Amino acid sequence: MSFRPRTQRGSATLFAVAVLGLLMLVGAALGVVAAMVHAHRVAQAAADLAALAGAEAGARGGDACSSASAIASANGAILDSCAATGLELRVQVTVRGPRWLGQRHDLAAQARAGPA
Image (tube, rainbow, N blue to C red; front, side):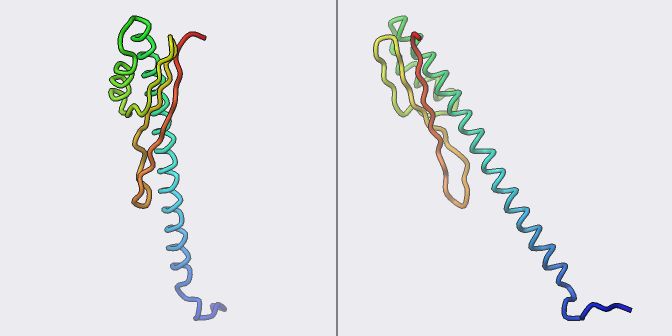
């Protein structure tokens, strides 16, 4: 004989659906965070490589910023700013980030290359 009231019949199903929905939302949010971390690392790598390539081109007498722009675009980034001062080069790049709830979050990174 069961002692539970009949008014709670089926409430476990609602609870299970709510928990599964919450787990799916948390999983999607973690996926977006992981994608943002990955995009930031891609942006930083592109900035580092662009700064190094531009500084080398500038040291050899070439156009540092055009070389940095070519390397940044080859690594999936857009060169936002480039400033060459003597043998030093500072760059800033942007990488398109993931979409979350209809909004895109772009990630930027900066790098400097030159003598220590």
